[in-house]
Image (cartoon, rainbow, N blue to C red; front, side, top):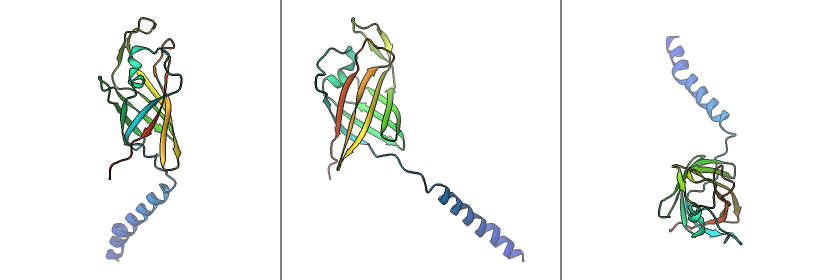
Length: 157
């Protein structure tokens, strides 16, 4: 009788617990995988003047995305190696710069330390994933948002 109780406690209960956990998580869907290197293209008509800190898009840089589940880190290859951190929900990406940037554009009312925001949507077109969005100075309407699109650079095999 004692061995039967021990068998139930040490084998049956853990097995039932594992099955319950697997069943409760069966509806979970992983976020889309967007990690990798991306090349940015300026949008049509994006030659208007932007605040000086938004040149990360105006000069057509590349960016690198690292991902851990829904958490995203983005690093641009500009002189300041601008870094963004944020969240991916469904196909919507919302990030902010890790460190404040200094806006020095004299035409802007937002001179000083500000955070940049990158808001984008991912669209799957066949085998290709595209990113379309804007980079803007968070909370500063006098700095025009910079629209952009980005295409993933295929990984080398």
